[in-house]
Amino acid sequence: MKKTIFEEMGGTYVRQGDYFVPCLTLPAEKNKPIGVWGQRHKRYLREHKRATYTNLLTSGKLNSYLANIDEQAEEMFFWLVKQIAERESVTEQLKAENALEWTGE
Image (cartoon, rainbow, N blue to C red; front, side, top):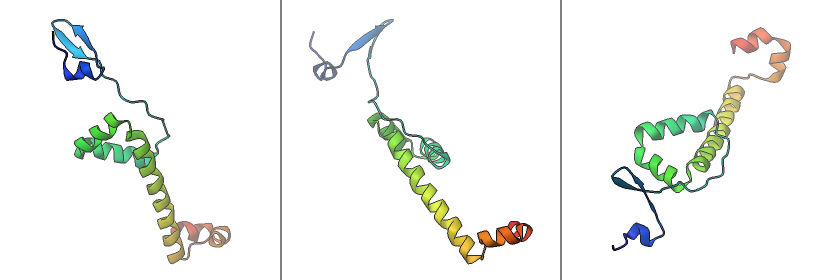
């Protein structure tokens, strides 16, 4: 019997009932912690950008991509908080002197 292209590339099949199913595994990927922003982006990709999600998952790049997105979003969040605090004149000195006013700001 002639080999399939999959078998010529080193792939194998497993018989399950009457069918031959290819043995597929995802490439190993280094696990990095993913924060809240990365988890939200993952949910967005799964629900709205399925092709991108599947491509990243099958190429073994999903975790590193999400960790990078999380890092960028975290930096942007802290930068925005700092800008707003400066614009509103909310400082640590105000917090120490008048906590109630600081909370109101």
